[in-house]
Each structure stands twice: as C-alpha cells, then as structure tokens.
Amino acid sequence: MSAGRVVIGGSTGFMGRFLLPRFRAEGREVVTISRSGADIRWGDQVEIDRAVDGAALVIGLAGKSVNCRYTPENRAEIFRSRLDTTASLSTAIRRASAPPALWVNSSTATIYRHAEDRPMTESTGEIGTGFSVEVAKAWEKALFADELPSTRRVALRSTIVLGHGGVLGPVEKLARFGLGGSQYDGRWPVSAARRAAGTGHLPGARRGRQRFSWVHIEDVARIIEFLEQTPSLDGPVNAASPHPVDNAEFMATVRRVLGVRVGVPMPRWMLELGAIGMRTETELILKSRWVLPEKLAAAGFEFRYPTLEDAIRESFDRSQVAEAESVA
Image 1 (cartoon, rainbow, N blue to C red):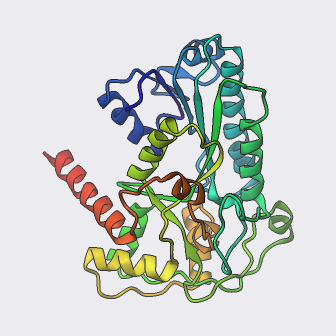
Image 2: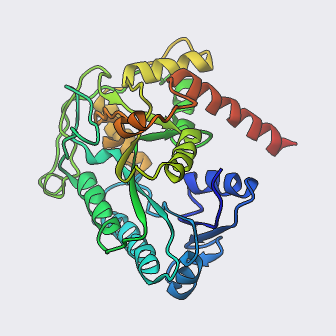
Image 3: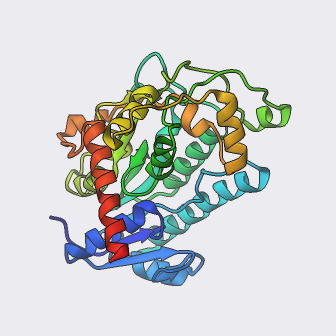
C-alpha cells in the first residue's frame, strides 16, 4: 500500500467523491481542490503550491461535464475548466522543492476515432477529429507542457465509468419505463455551424452496433493505486475493461439485471429530440468507442470487474444500499 499525501484537484465530481474516502480510509492525508466544498479553491495558487509541495500523488480530475449541449459558451468552458486547472497543477509541481513522484491527470478515450473495425490501444490507436477530440488533445498537451523531470505523468484515458450514480442513473430510468432498448444511429440534419465546430455526429454503426467501452469506478481507483506501484507506466494509459461490448449488449445487460423483459429501441430522431430537451449531445451514446487496456494488461493489472454484468449488478446493488441508508 502506498503512503504520503494525496492532492485531488476536482474532488467534488463523480470520481473525486469516490476516491476521497478511499484514500482517507487507508490513513493517507488528502488535500482537496475544487471551485467549492474543498480544502482549497481553484485560483488560490499559493495554497495549491503549498499542498502539492511534498505530496506523493497528485490527481487531476477537474473539468466541466461534457453532458451538456455544445453551445459556444459551453465549449469554451469545457476547454477553460480543463486547461486552467491542469496548468495550475503543473505550475505547483514545477515550483515544488519536493515534487510528487506521480501526477495522474484525467483524459478521455474519446480522443480515439469512431471505431467499428478494430479496437484502439495506446500503441495502435488512431486519434479522431471533432470537438471532443480537440478537447482531449489540448488537455493532454497541457499535462505534458512543462519540464517536470522528477514527476512521472499519466494521462488516464478513461472510457465510460460505471458505478453508483453517473451514467447508469438515467439509463436505469429509461429501462424501467420500457425504453431500455438499443440506441440506433441514423441520419439527422447537421447545421453548417455545428459541422464547422466539430459537434455534429455523422451516421455510423446501425441497430445498436456502436461499440461501448467501459470501466467500473472501483477499477479506476485500483488503476490509480496500481500506477503508484508501477513506475514503468507513464504517458497515455487506457482505463477500459478488457471486455467491451456494443450498445445492444449493454442495454440488454441493463434490462437483464433489472429484470425488465422489454426494451423499445430508440431511433436517432428520438434520441436527438430527447438530447435537445435534456440539454445534452447524442455523441455520448452514438460514437463507437472500442478501446482496450494494452498497457495495463502488459503490466499485469487484474480487473475486479472485467465483465459488464458484474459491474452493472454491483452498481445497481450499491444504489439500492444508498437509497436505503438515505431513508433510514
């Protein structure tokens, strides 16, 4: 088990809330940074410098959620929230007299292209195009921008993270309402402005055959712990289960775990109208993400939740426990 102070930037999000009690339960000192509800606020560089100096591990998780409409204002904030916070951590590490041995910064497996033909790995993956890819590229560039010779850096290219809350919340509701069928891609008009901004999803896999790469939140935490103990790992690392599925299998597994027999498929026109109403983007479910954890597998990492059904079942079981505790 590793020791030493942990600094978590972006501690109030889905992943940060999971990691914080975990590290503290191990007896480690944890310093949190966020816009609110944390030990230090973003923008207070003096305190961030003080927290990072002498820390063993820095984890960067900050960034506006991409679960929104890609308006010009939201696009700018998605970039700014990632680049400014990453630069702040980099500055603190560069100034530190005792810099951390490891900096793990969030990235995303969305950096890879829409893939229906073969899986993307760290060594053979092809970088895609479009707004989301440009965000990921800029985020990783900010991570590796400064000369930090004493600090190993990892860009954690996370796939869809499953756990209590997160993406499974709305998926569960859809399934229980009988709308838990496959999400079908298809034709949909894309305006010139959205096409120019790289935010218009072009038709891809049909009938729910877009690939769905995922990872359980418990395994993300264990990957970070594994990275601390494995100094040979650096650069981009895919955080993805070794057993990706497609959208049809994902939704069928959700229904099976919930005991829901019927799920009506949702064609693209329905998804697009729903996305407009919910202020989100269909790219989040229609892009084919086919990613494998090549580096982790080669280093000997073993997933606690390698298969989808076990991951979904644990996530829903934990949700039921949380609901019971809130009622009690």
